[in-house]
Image 1 (tube, rainbow, N blue to C red):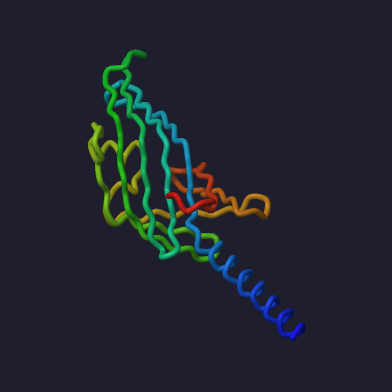
Image 2 (image 1 turned 45 degrees about the vertical axis):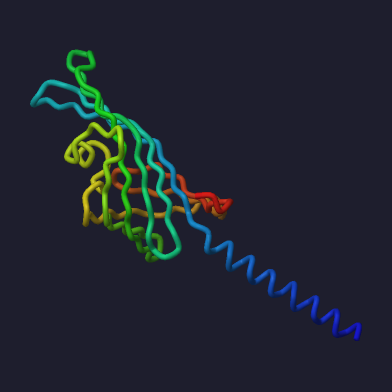
Amino acid sequence: MKKYIILMAFFTMLIMAALYIWYDHRKPIRCESVNFMKVNDLKHQRTIFSEGSMLMTFFNDATGVGVYIGDITYEENEKIVQRNNVNKTFKFTYSIKYDQLTIVTETVISNMGNRASDDEAQRYIYPGFQKGKIMHGTLLNIGGTDTYAVAENMNPKSICHKVLNDKI
């Protein structure tokens, strides 16, 4: 009887460890980046600044959601002549092969408060704000942990980590 109880306790702990590992791998991965870009528009003799934050969540079913909040500012002679708020949400699918990340934008939504045109958002912030747009990047593991950096043409400084709790 004592061996039976010890054997049952061992199998229970083994099942709990397997469930923990399975659950831990099923947690989504969240990537955060702060974006800043300066463009000198020589044709119109102005400077264009885009700055904001992007948060992307990658779910285990190869889908994801991204949110961007920021501004596009136009300056002429070092004076602000126009500022457009950018507030976009987008859904995407993704695949990872080796360390290569491919993202395909499925839908893009301009949220309340968005004042930037789609063309401005695609040109000065993220080309992925266009349905069907395919973006490529590289995942770089940081120090053998669950933290990654994403190097992508328009988001070179994204830091990614597993979501620690179930609140998304």
